[in-house]
Amino acid sequence: MVIHDGARPFVTPELIAAVLKACKRNCASAAAAPIWDTVKSVGRANMVERTEDRTKLWTAQTPQAFPLSMLIRAYKEVEARKLVVTDDTSAVEMIGEQVKLVEWLRPNIKITTPEDLPVAAALISLV
Image (tube, rainbow, N blue to C red; front, top):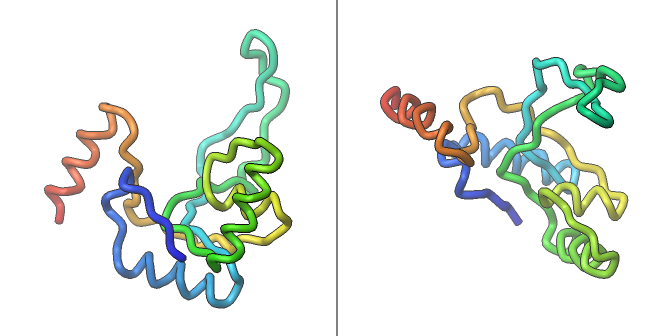
C-alpha cells in the first residue's frame, strides 16, 4: 500500500517507483531527505540543552509504502495504546518494524502554510 498526502503536490512517478522498489526489498519505505540545518534541543524558556547530530537526522516525506497487513497491525497498536503518531512510518516503527528511507532531494515540498504557496507557484512556473 502506498500512502501520499495531498500537501505534497510535486510527487513524481520516479519517486513513487523508488519507494515501491524499496518497499519490496525492505517491507516498509518512505521518501526522505537528510537535513542540512543545525538542530537544537531546547528546554525551559527555549534554552538550548544540546545540539543534535544532524548526520543522523532526515525529514520524512511521502509517499510511504507498506504491506497492508503491517499498516493495519501498526494502527491497531496505536489505537490500543491511545497514542498519537505524526506519520504512518511512526506507527510502523512503534511495532518494531524497520523503515527504509529513500533519499529524494528533488522538490517534494509540503504546502502547509500560506508562506509555502509562493514557493509552490515558482516550482509550477519551472515545469
